[in-house]
Length: 89
Image (cartoon, rainbow, N blue to C red):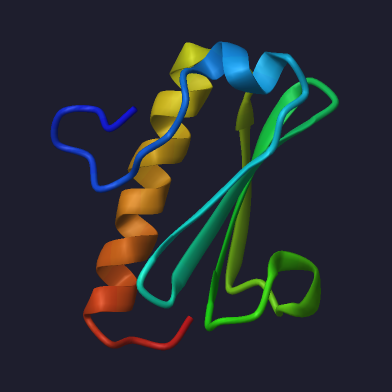
């Protein structure tokens, strides 16, 4: 579900508490949100290769709750803005 003001179509946090991983893309900007024990790991990379064949441009961990998901979304927005400015990671 796309949240107001967000570029990302991300499920609600209970999707992740059920141990589900979410992968998406905006053009060549790729992102992944995955539960990791009691944390939510957010990863971004660039290109057409899938997650396990790519070098991660950035990885960050957040709490596995609604606040953590909100922080992860804000972090993804920052990473996307960084990518759109044409800067290398």
